[in-house]
Picture (cartoon, rainbow over the protein chains, first blue to last red):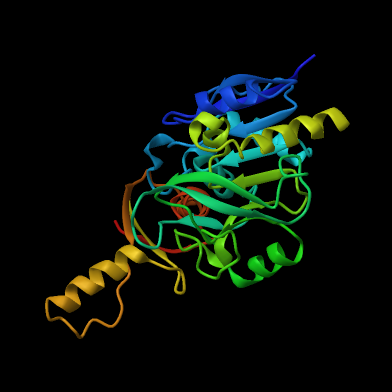
Length: 231
Length: 78
């Protein structure tokens, strides 16, 4: 039986269909759409929060989505150790919900940035990143992806291997300031202390087929498959 | 009763929009501007209740401000 992957849809989500496609294109994974007004998640094996927008992103990105009816069930699932991945707006929702540390500010240059970036994979093994290659080419598409955390939080993230993805320069090398959006320490993705909740600004679902210019994003969904099979 | 909530990015948090506005003032000849923050003002009309201030604080902590990056101040009017 295929593993049940809940993909949330908020009012304004626009990467949810792509995300379900990428999930369904992975052996043994089956995507199930969950509307934000639901209060019951069912019994998923993983929960994904897609990119796009939510509630107009009024006040702050993800600030209102965080109080969607479905989010109580997501918090419960995350706190019980279930694997949760937030992509782009989904990452913003997870930080607003306090499931991930830090916050996403407006991009340093006040521009919406849509481009393929080179990411370095590092940090601890998680359900979504175990076995990933050291570098991946995955697009970003956001206006508010400038990761910020205070110094204590940054020290903890770096020290505990919670930085999972870092923006590299075009040659795939670590370079301070390589993040096109101004993120501190060039951070593109992190996980919580337990490692089961992951957030990232780049869109793996937009790099899940060679026809899209890169299939590197597939590795995250394959990692989830491997994680669930090994459970 | 009326209340006004001021929300602003904490010092040290990059505020590119404010930087752009400050740059605009500088290029107009207002070189005296040493710093500028762009915040939000949220006006609320509330039912009177004895725990109003406490509840306003909860509103700020939970939704109106993200205390990871923002500070807030509450002013209570008539």
